[in-house]
Image 1 (cartoon, rainbow, N blue to C red):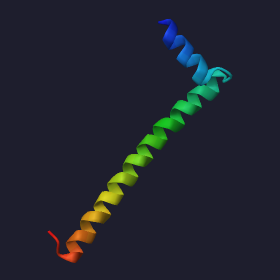
Image 2: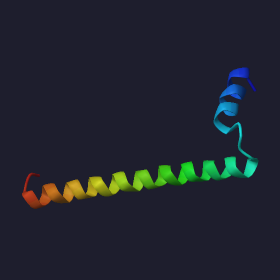
Image 3: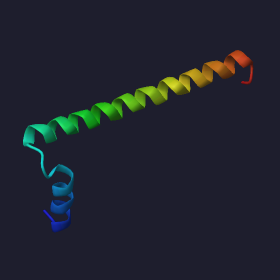
Image 4: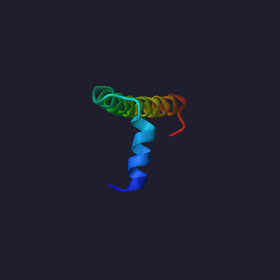
Length: 56
């Protein structure tokens, strides 16, 4: 592991226990998944709105 990687890891996870770091990773993954679902829903909404307006 490089020194830069170690320092970045320490700055991000420094005061956390292993369980907390694992939970943070899980929450970040869940947040990413939810953002993707929201973006897809917003896209579907925009497509339906255009279709209703007859702009296609």
